[in-house]
Length: 405
Image (cartoon, rainbow, N blue to C red; front, side, top):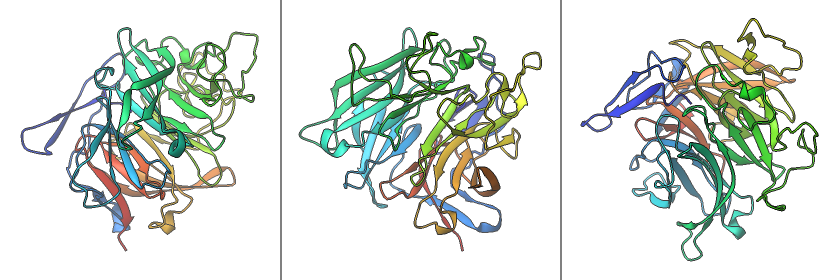
């Protein structure tokens, strides 16, 4: 996400959101942001958005997840370094602090506490995994924490076990998502390290972790590592010095990925540079092109060898009507939205557009605009029953999509 391109300031009047934009570290600014403070519906009023928890507001929310532990709780990640928890009830009035690591986190722009995942056996082991930035020097940290032995709504801040760190040469393009796949391995989204145009060509450098999707086995630590490398990772036991944690590469700034619960397919939104936003299906060993390509277009005409590159499933040109910063979503299994079942729901942070993509025979066959969320669409999320939610970064609200018919 381009937090550093669209900077929010909250005025004294509650929920009055303004925006401005700035060119920073070689990247472009944004010209507009949908700043209304309430959800809106799509053209034709097929779908509507409403606050899911009207009594709650969050400070710069970037993630919503739920453990499948039978408790029906929702956890919201605030960028500054706090995770909040609350019961999944529409009339809830309070979201308690589950974990507060604000003193550890370097936040602002695209930096901060950016991702949260629950171990598949969370109900028995109480492990959570987070992705955050810290400085100085600026680096990303992948850590494990454990829930308190006496209070299920509090994590022990002293239980941190750092699994992996990697330096960030610039303040933007930090990726941030962490999630467990159907294979039980932990996947990690890593941006190209920032500035504009990937000046170090890090996304194509397989000796670096930047600009990649990583996959590690956290259940079987080995030697000095707090994890092992899955046997079928593409560069396992290579002789060239490539990082074995790499699952896929050639990413610019993957902002939100998710797994299709039915098929296990890994979907990701990759934020573009000056022209195009893209949605990818991530495969083992895939090279998704950056900085050779920006989606399906050559980024540098002098060096544009397309051989072996994986094309996006869909993409859109940046603009005032489409947006400027893709937010990856989920394949929908929300029982309240049966007409969207099996479709990939994603959006744009700047325009607030929400699309439903139909995927069949290994290609996108339809892409429908179904709604628009105001206030900065930072993330989609699911509860334990697979109901779909949306986060408004600037207003701090959580929204639910429903049929207007």
